[in-house]
Length: 192
Image (cartoon, rainbow, N blue to C red; front, side):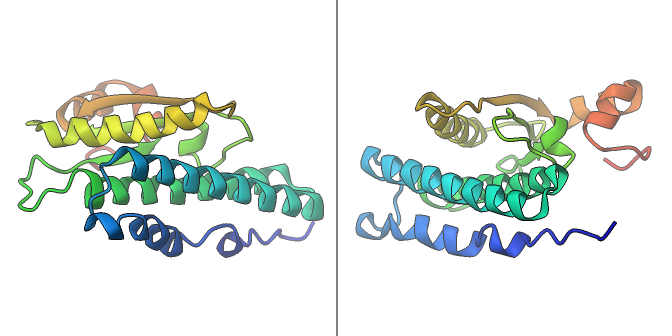
């Protein structure tokens, strides 16, 4: 059996998506917090998701590999979530002088976290926050989740599942719970 080329570069151009989202804020001086811009961002993300699904379906019909299709969809969603995160921290909840508490990691878990996303699957995300959290982190998480939920509410079968945890909690579970360790892909002791 020959190896299937994933052609991930033809799925999405993450840098171009970020530029397109940033361009929506030009008239507002880079501020993306307004309702009109939020609606435009949501539409761009919907259009991109639809475009990516169409490309993934076309590739599936060509190579007949369901696994390759799931990897492509996962890659596509990774880029959408990265672009949404970057937009939220750059244009919606800007922090001009961020403290060490104003940082986070957005981690895919479940099947999506393993790099495969079936069409219509839930998006399972873990937001890893510092021990001492600020309102900034909560705002970023809520903005991203509301954007994903709004997308799901408009006829998409996808649902965004999430969990917010502090790093100390993940570290504790990592050392005491095998399921948590495998879910978070932290298989080696002391990697956190």
